[in-house]
Structure formats: structure tokens, C-alpha cells
Image (spheres, one colour):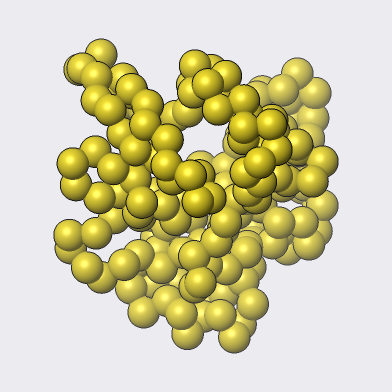
Length: 179
């Protein structure tokens, strides 16, 4: 652990201050721990893909998309054996290809999480076609089926501004604030 910092997180129209641990080498830029979830009385509803805070007074989708984000869908049926990984062929809508003039980031779609598989977050150069491969991990003890047409990941073009970085479409500002 490198230290502690207090961040202000905006949940809907409510600002919440919370102390976070600074840790190296995480797979994600921020993790909301059990202490935060308890403090905000969080309820995660996977069946409706929503999360609520403060006894339902704040109701948010589990995953939001940047205006230029595009869903990547499996192009064929694939079975991933237990405790293994596979590259899943995916595609985006052809009309969405014009959104990608630069590099893009691929992140898991909430539906892949519900299927209990993990999609590797990847940085890709401008996709020349609407077809890509996503690396998918099955950590379960049984095989997992990825059906043709199911949402696997989301691809978002990276912002060209050097002083700005988005994490899951939440802007991180200086002075330890998420806005």
C-alpha cells in the first residue's frame, strides 16, 4: 500500500467523500470496497443491471457508455473450457467504424460479468474493420458458453486530450476528485 487519499465521488446528484487506499498494480484504476458499499447502503441488482445507493434514493445503471462507445458482439458460438481462456471473435456495427480515428480501449460489457467470465481490458489501434478478437477468461469449474450475438465487450475511442483520462467513463480530475 502506497498511502491513503480522500476522494469525492459523485453518485447521481450526490457527492460522497471517502478515504481510499492507494495500491500499485491493480487490474482496475479504482475499486469500491465493502466499507464504501456499506457506508452508501449499496444494493447491486444484477437482474436489472442497476445499482442503488442510500436505500434506493440514488439509482444508477451498472454500466454507462461514452457517447462514442460501441458494443462488441460475439460472431460465433464458443465454448470456453473450465479454468481456461479463449479468443472470442467479435464485431461492431459497420456504421460505428467512423467513430474510431485513433486508438481505442476495449472493456468488459456487464453481460459478460453476468455470464461469470472475465474479458481482458485491451488498448487497440484504430480498428481497420469492425472485426476484433477479445480475450475471455473462464475461472469457473465448468465450461461457459458464449452465444453468437451476445454482448461481450465495449470499445471506446480514446480522448485526444493529453491532460484528460476517463476511467469507465468517469472523469478523474486533479486534487483527488472524481467528477
